[in-house]
Length: 245
Image 1: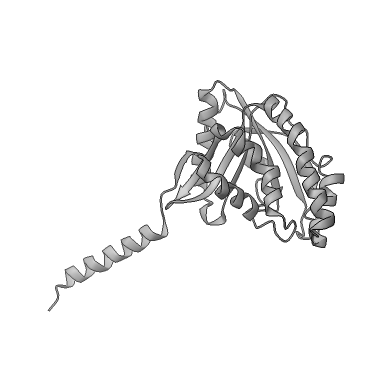
Image 2: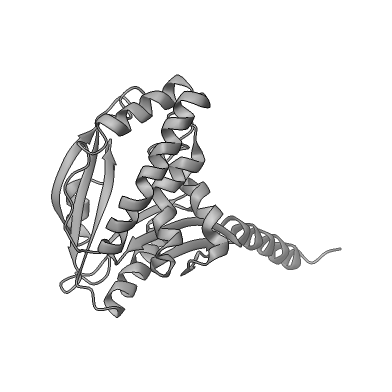
């Protein structure tokens, strides 16, 4: 007859193993060239308020070009990724060279715009994609709030399965520590705010000051509540990490 205590231990070990399979400790590391496609895919998979961008804008290639290409191709040293069980599930991409980005955008944006317009007429795009392009051309700049000049900034995205306060903190803190090591004293981000998420009080809790905000209308047909784009800035001398007091 089996020893009851052995059966209990065996059951407990199985439960522990199951828990280990459910949760894998996230690894935050520097971006490398092999991560480029994963970053672009995550960008498109989270582009519509944390969900895939496809219903609004079907051209995932161009969407990722506009939002990630500078950071992965021109300033990869300022990017970090979050990896769980060997899979890249999130990233934070940053810019510490605003002047370089300005000239890059001046050079590359017309080329990307040409590709957009060529595909607009000859691909052809779906009506939803054409509406997005119309918004981009006529309202995109108007609905982007002013940002500080000559100041580092960042973009962060995580897949839904990877989102947690701990993972987000580790990812942001890695970038903030990187900025401090290079002697920067400020950083800003432009954060999408909708529903009950990311209220101004939360930004203040993390040491960010809200500079401005503006309503963004590109999701109006797909999301019932108002969506805003906030510009927030952090003084790294006062609060060098996310949860610093």
